[in-house]
Length: 208
Length: 164
Image (tube, rainbow over all chains, first blue to last red; front, side, top):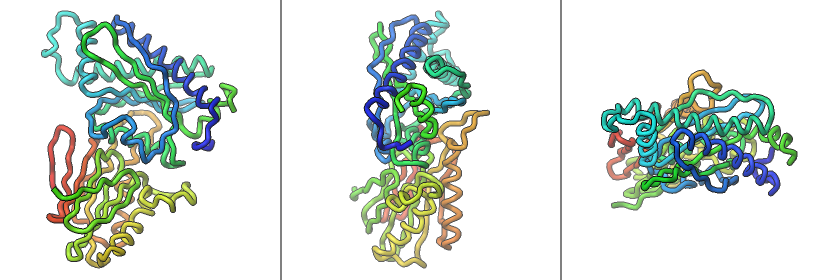
């Protein structure tokens, strides 16, 4: 697969994959929080790996990220990341929803982290379930990994996935926003297909 | 404050004293500095991956990307600016593993430790002394190298600064 030359139709197909996956992810988050969850129009872009660190803004910005791998016929990496502040607000929302009556200050940090990992895991699994239906076949999902760090450091994971074989990364992303609240809580779902498995995906979608 | 040059992914930059070198948010990548205090020259390279096998002709365009092409390229670049190879010293930081997924096939997530090992091994072969290093772990690092104090300042989110 030539990572520098995708047809418009192929990029459109990737956007549609993002749309279907993120739609399912938004529904899962909405059910979990009993709130409206909005999503942006998905993007599918080829990004130079050398410019990745600044792709989402300030590389020093603290973010929280949940990462999973999907294995099977079509392999990919999935990341759910948020500004650290938004991540903490999301945990507050979840805890007040699921454990009503518990004072937020009484929740130990390990438990907050665990809640955050689980939200990310459910969002990413839901995304992947939709892809499974679309592709047919089954794909297993790894246990989630979580990191709280600088955006630039997190994005280097993406650079190392695509860097071995080329200079460009294919990034499919969508922003999810939790509605009905004063504070702005949003997060990005990012899908990164392995370069080697794109052909399988495109063939299934009949755009190759 | 002296002028600071930002060394982006796969970049290689050489400066003279008193200018500074810096890299923001190193994760699995390596920031390698070679310097000659007498000639007052230092260079930094931002290494992304351990080896260029499989990259073909592309590797020559961005020698900073792979450890095996970055180390010789950095030696040449600092020497071209007046450093003497026998006086060169090295410092490096980075090579962390941001995510760990138990049970999954995730060799690529451990690329940080392979980056660090490969770079250190290559330095050994060249005979350039590695004065100090801060590698591994699971946290990102921001590094700054001063060509006045010849110290590498490493900042980790939530843990403050250390000088090596």
